[in-house]
Every structure is written in C-alpha cells, then in structure tokens.
Image 1 (cartoon, rainbow, N blue to C red):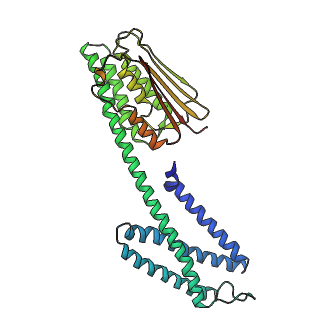
Image 2: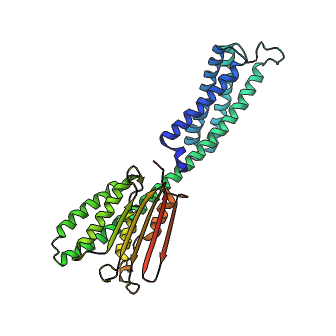
Image 3: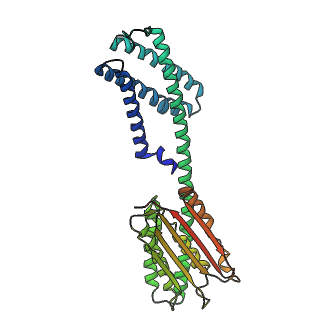
Amino acid sequence: MLNVIFSGRTRLITHLTGWLLVFFIFFYLISGLRGAQEALGRTCVNMVFLLILFYGNARVLVNRFFETGRIRLWLLLLVVFWLGMAALRTWTEHFLFGGGIFRGISGIPQENGYRMFLAYALSFLLLLVFSALYQLLENRRELEIRHAEAQLNYLKAQINPHFLFNTLNNIYAAATLQHPRTADMVLRLSDLLRYVTYDARADKVPLEKEVDQIRAYIDLFQMKSELSLPIRFEVEGDCSGLDIEPLLLLPFVENALKHGDLDENPEAFLHIRLKNESGRLTLEVENSFNPDNRQKDEIGGVGLENIRQRLELNYRGKYRLETVRNERSFRSVLAIETPVH
C-alpha cells in the first residue's frame, strides 16, 4: 500500500537510508579535495546543519505554525532560521577549517565570507523548500490514512450488529421450537462474538482464524435444523502463514445463508469454495434462493457494497469481485492477490 512508506518502521528506515546516502556522497566529494580526516569532519558538520534545517523546518515550523494557519509568523521565523543557519555555517567554516573547501587549490577563485554566505544561503533555501513540501505531503497522507481507518472502522461497525441480529434470530427460532441444542448455539455464538468484537479490531488476522469462524457460523446455522442442510464448504491449498483483513470472507457466507432458501427448498444448495494458490486467494460462494420471497430483504444488511468499500480501502488494485445473479441462484467470486511464501 502507498501509505507504507509514510508510517512506522519503514519510514524510519527510509530516512536513515537517505541520510546515510547523503553522508557518503558528501564524504566522497570532499575527500577528493581535502584529506580523509578533514573530509570526515566537514561531512559531519554538513550533516548536522542539514538535519537541523530539514527537521527544524518540517517538524517545528511547518507543523506548529504553517499547519495551524499562522502563515505570516511561519514566514518570519523561516527567514530568520534560514539566514541565521547560513551565517552560522559560514562562521563554522572559518572557525573549524580556516576557510572554504577550495582554499589552497590553484586555478579556483578563493571564497570570501560574503560569497560563502550566499552559497550556503542558496543551498539551505533549496533544502528548506524540499523539507516543507515533504512535511506537507506527509501530513496530507497521514490525514488520508486516518480517514481511511475511520471509514474502515465504521464499515466494520456496520457488520457487527448485522451479524449479531441474524444469529440471534436463528437462536430465537431454535428456542421457540425448544431445540435441544439451543445452549450449544449460545455457546457457539459467544465464541463468534469474541472474534467479531476483539479479533476484528486488528488490521490483519490469520486466514485460518477466519476459516474457523466460517465453519463455526455454518455449524451455528446448521444447529437450528433437524435435517442436514445441503451446505458444502471446501478449502484448497495451504491457509497457514497468510493474513487477511478480519471479517472479510465471513459476510459472504452470512449473506448467502440469510438470503438463501435452505429451509424451504428441497433442491436448495450452498456451495463455498476457498482456494489459496500461486499468490491468489479465491472465495467462491454460490447459493440458491427463492425469487418470490422478499421477506428476508425487508431489513437491508450491509451487503456486498460494504465489502467492496473495504476492499477498496485495503486491497485497491489487488482484488477482483464479481457477482452473477441467475433466475434461482446467486454467485459471488472474490479473488485477492496475496504474497507467495
């Protein structure tokens, strides 16, 4: 995902790698003009000024003044910071090294203090512009990430009550019939709710855990029927070592059970096939339904649109979702690109 380079450990590694590259470039160029010891000293001094300029402007001036709308104060402080650092760098050049980097080299005009100050001022200005643009882009990206996380949490929150109400309806139907396994259904519901309530807070969960919850939900639905329902769930390939977004696959099964006609049609069916191979996870769910029965759709659920939005947030460009509605059956296919282990 695009936000990976802007967050966490990867961002730290990116910054360290970039600054190390700058360090070695400076050292290589300066060592061609001065000795190794002086080149190392000049490089370290340069790096100190570059780091102060970059992060001082980005983290302090931009974040505390520009981003809070105090543009004039930001400009004033930026100019003072810019010229002050250029003057300080010019002074350190004379104090620590006795003059410019080209001193004593024949054929090259010697720098005086004024020329040296202008050179540092120009280079520092370019760095300040770059650091400001970087920080502004990073802040905008962080806002996008937070917005996406808030939207994803909202979509997950929609699933939880939808999931709960459907399951409670199943248990209620069994209780009214004094089904002997009602207590087992409540226990199984408790396990499912633990997954929905706690595990679903994570960004990713093991695929095996999502598969276990699908099996548990099917068992829970099966318990309310005296007869064995025509539900087939097949898993192909190795599910270990693969993480996915929680509650991504379960809603497909939930919707198929809700809108299907397993309780009323002798020829009803529900076929679920999960396949993981060659860097692609594929879920196929096909169920029969009664086109004349609209009662189940009076209270709408989260539906496939919710799932599609979540896929766009976390798997954009890496998934394919297709649905086919026939006269008496509905088929949905979800394919997600996954890393090959």
